[in-house]
Image (cartoon, rainbow, N blue to C red; front, side, top):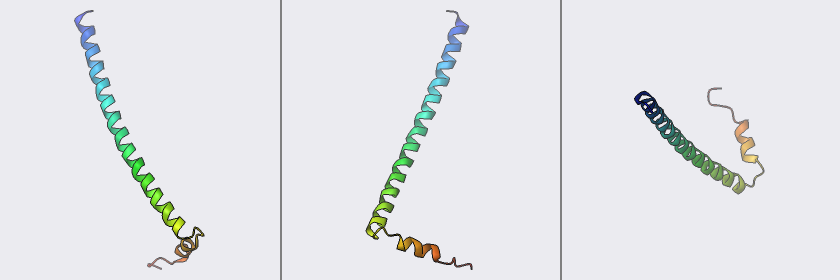
Length: 69
């Protein structure tokens, strides 16, 4: 294997290692976001279940007029 081919392979490996690191960081950030969303969903589901689940409170919020009207 000549010197140029070896250097080219080293460059490719360095690029792939960098890409792998970036993907790993992105995956970690997305997993944290998913965990936060799951937690929020669980809290909202619990609130709805404790309110009787009939949607009466949600309906009253939809009927409210925003303060700028």
